[in-house]
Length: 356
Image (tube, rainbow, N blue to C red; front, top):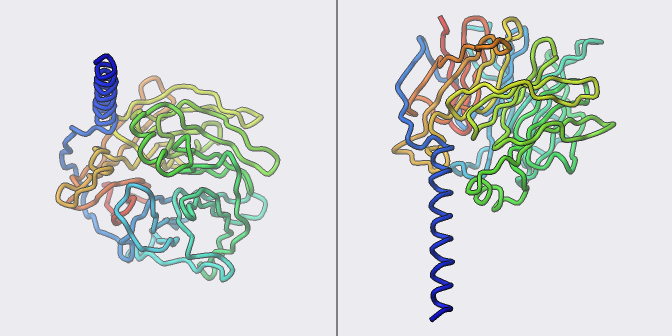
């Protein structure tokens, strides 16, 4: 009889723990939030981008780079292959063009996630860094962009034990960058099920160069988008499950010191920074539960948030766009240029809207 009582107590305790964790996860993922439509004028879906546009970054000349074809645990299944597109935002046609990849590059395993551009001030060479997940592992592919024929030259593949669950990246040199690890473990089952269930602040930010690699910031529930201020002094990190953006100051040894965090009220993914104003543009998931429990009849919505004057005492956090998923599902990035806003998604389409 005593043994049965002990078993019953254990079962009851585990049930209570499970229930509490589910409630916590629903709270973190904003499962009860309903989105109110907040559309922009003259929105059009871009052609050729039917399998996501997970990350977007724009050059000063208006050329937007877009990663597409991400295959990631928990997302709707896809047989799409990874590709990089560019769109000339100064061309009224807004036609995405697929970049030619080098022949010696393994396209079959290419699974692009976060991207970053670095322009070498010594010769204006354009380097594209791409987070890729072959067989659900993490590595960084470095390319040089050849603008005359819209092609990529593969330079190297970067792997390191500290780069084990990379989500996004911001290049700070020809061969150096900061990257976010969105999970603590690399095992797919633990990463995809156990970690969200436990929802602990275990993810981090890593600095990498050929000379050294080190963890420079930690304690995130889900470190996601990362970018840098126009003056190169600050790093911005979006913590998806904590609904905020962290501001970190760079030190001479590339360490990061936390300055503050800014609440955004949404599950924000990638970060783009306006090079002139310093505004942060965030592609966000207004209800993350709908992303994780994908139902085409009740699709995940999209939200774009802008943060102005982030270094002031009271930054302005504004919702610029919102959709319930009927137009755009699962927004992951937003980038502004020349009065237009590009909105990308994890697995859906890409949208261009007028800001004015």
